[in-house]
Image (cartoon, rainbow, N blue to C red; front, side):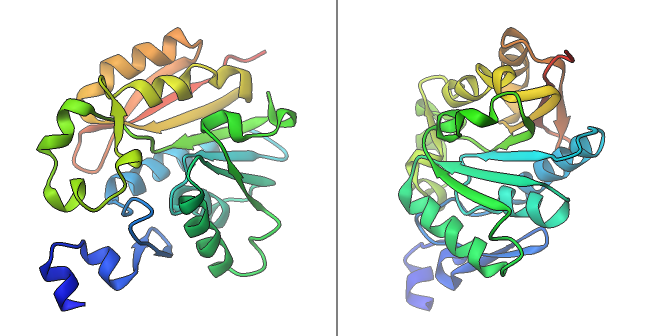
Length: 231
């Protein structure tokens, strides 16, 4: 373990697990390392969820990675269903292991689905999603070289780099969101602080209302929040 750490491998991968809110997650090089910024995004998502009246709430974690967001939603709130999607079969394998680690109560509640963003979900969920949360790639191709080596060289590139602008995946999530959310349902997306104005514009263009960007614990713009219009 010391040799691995000395070679630059992140501590979280060396020890093989890391805390995230109330969870202790298995992590390795197939998924992003859970971070405090994402914990704060989950806190925002839970606050938003608590203000929505839904008798059988359905939550979706788009691009689940280790399962950190989906499993936090399942554990910390009463949800009828929680869907965790990812395009990477390796990431879903890690999320599945973490789901199994929660015990039998979580198995019938949390469902894993492979595919890109909303496309992984069954059509029956259209218009029924109470809360959708995502920590998508939001680093531009030009910014990748400036990342710390411990991030750039070890964490999965596909979970970090979005494309030339850094907004590609956020746009893919916000664009169809109103078609999947229930009336009054909410979308919460983790973003880079310098993207706040651009992602808010994307959300409004997609038809979301009450759009805002909430700060993280350091006061930096971090969580895009938008709601589907009421019917």
